[in-house]
Length: 261
Length: 78
Image (cartoon, rainbow over all chains, first blue to last red; front, side, top):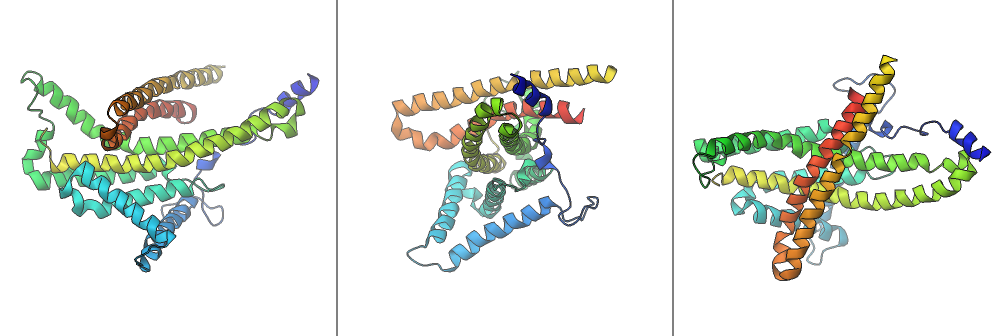
């Protein structure tokens, strides 16, 4: 009991803060972060692009009839997204397939690279995902007006509803349309941030045995098990969130190409 | 003293905000449960609806993430 009390006294607060991993700092030296500073975010983004290029360019450079392992992964990735665009956003959306593929590969690779120990998850920052989501939002809105003209506004005017209800529904539709980029970006950033913060919370509890054997004998194995379990969940979440981000882009694209309800 | 009370309010607010997670859990569980119930009755139609299920999960989960965001804002931004 005495050791426990002593341990609790010493271990006031966590060993490190779970939010420390999201601090943006310069990659070289300790200067202030300016507009053109090469930060750890930039470093991991460059790495993301290089990894994606390595998979897709090197993987398909052989173009053998019997694909190598890397080639089949690249082909699987391509086929998966192509089928998603066709199924969700119809065949007319295929000209925009390269954009959607780029989005998917970028988000997927930055999610997965962020899972490496000591890595920085670029998609855990709302600044990064908000740019991606705003790009989708602007593209889809411009595309809707270019393809359909004023007919794009039919997206907000639900002709199957009773006439008296339509203005109210239109108001709700307009609000939900403008909330799209917010939820689109915060869903990805929030998921990544929450998962990594939980990992770090358990990681901070893991060295408890060095402070107090009494509590640590119970807490340390439990938190190491929890880290393993949550890491496995995070691998799944990293893929699912990239998938969800892409499929929502497809849904928005479908709305732009076929605005009639 | 005033700062202490403000900090207490922050912590209480952040804790209350995390109650929203329960709502997201109910929502996601509802979506997947109904998908599974439908899929077991008509397994041949299940594969085509997986994407719809994930969209449903994403919408339900986003609101839970918003509550997490509110908690974070209370803890670090206010």
